[in-house]
Image (cartoon, rainbow, N blue to C red; front, side, top):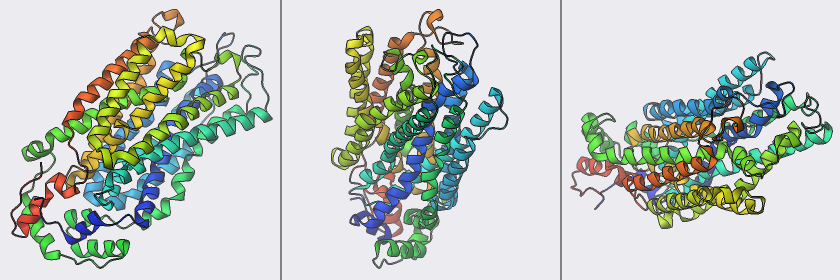
Length: 533
């Protein structure tokens, strides 16, 4: 048997789906809406930044960001996210989830606005300002990963916990979609007001001075959804699991959850004190006991998230390059700067609408029926199959008559990423570790994922370049080509499938069953228990 839990935790585990569940999803989810908007909107404007700040007089192609600048602009927010995941994950276990929850949102809002500002007018100062604030934007975004996942898992009932955590994460899909739609609206409005010829007709005139406002407006708009939920984050009570199991305050936990659930809950302070006495010498993160109990679990969550993000971010951040390579986006010189933003945004919006958003919500609907393990296994399997289907006959897909087939297969890889490991790698680390280490372990898992994202973002820039240096983008060495790059991503997905077997299934089990904390509670109350495997 799993053992006897505290009354306040039992009440949460068996609670029917109520209004507070949905408010928690929205409050936590708007952070992820902002996260996705901010992380992915940069890919919509990098081509424009190249035209504005790196125009080369007499060149047959529009200006583009130099390789080192492009890598920094695309990757610096990911570096900040990695640092934020580790720092706020640790802080969430030390100070409490709620106490640092508002800080991450305010940091995101301030840095979203600041990233659209510039100290100086020359390219170097503009890019330095952009990179500086996008690093700290990423730092705030990073904190949202472990805190939102942990808060939602600790508020949810065990029957629908997976769906609730996945719903928070699924707000990313709306963030990506909104970024594309907003960029289309802004660029269409500017294009209607400030007419400009194509680059091939007039290289200078194709980038009107007002284009400099477009990328700033798109980046700064990311602050709005975060600010809308800031007040409600501050009003949320601390989770009962942190208050009771980590802070050891059963009375406060019972009082908070009595208000939330609108039922009377008995405070079991004596039992909590007995648990606290037993846990005085309990294992920490860097101990053999943690390694014995959760070492393979942590290896499973970190490795699968790492491998998933290599493939996911290289695809998402560089959609525009893939679409250009197969001819779905017209040649840059046939458009003016504003039209190029619109065209790239339209492509991203279509992918988000047809595959990214539906994939997330399929996970929400089925995760508590199929289980985390099955969804992750199916997701990695299908991503592997579709990636190889794109890569092996790559020359076939580059012909104009076959572009639609390529887009369909490419969209399916996104669908099964989101109805698959992109959602489950976020959900599982919030369920399988002890309360006192839950936020830290989720932060470590997420940071491992961002390390993969950095490899995908930086590596793909160079890897996907044409094998003929003369045909590579300006400033880049010859790469292995798009086809071979897609084969590499297929192999990465296959490895993710194999490492999935290290991740335990948590469907229908309480957090204390999964983490083994029920054993401590039963020993504290004098009962024997058989550990859940």
